[in-house]
Amino acid sequence: MPPESVIRRYIKVKALALGGAPGERDNAITILAAMEARHHGLREAANKYVRERARQRTAPPPSPPPKRRVHFEDILGGFAGFARGFSDFAEGIGNVVDGRRLAREVRVALRASNKSDSLILQFKIPQSTLTDAVELNPFQFQGFKEGLHAKLDEVLEEIFFDDEAEQSD
Image (tube, rainbow, N blue to C red; front, side):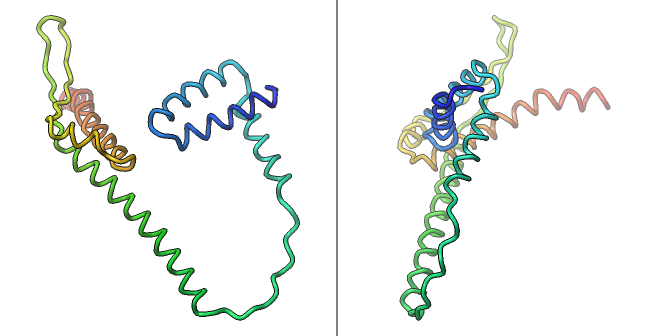
């Protein structure tokens, strides 16, 4: 079993891999793979460590709070908090859509190279799109990346799967 210090570091790096900024996530994933390769059973040990810590933190249920009257302002305050949370969520979704919309301006070109006897895949990004992409917030940038991935998927499917369909006919 890996030492506790390695397990704690692994948990912190995994948190970055799940919730960090795009560059942090990529680096964290690389570090996680290296740590798992170096310490056999690290992932399982970390999961067990987290479960045990959570079990230790659970306290007996608190005694019921004293009964009090519910005020109308409390109810409205709860709804206002819910509405703010929903509004933030909707704004995040809208930002992702904005990023995907910007990705539509990127063109994907596939051409054959005469010199190297290979296919060349190019993303043609207009200067105005590149300028806009630099100013995207994290949610918009995530949508932009997803849009580019979708374009790449379409081209790859066209390359690899259209040939199979023609051969089976």
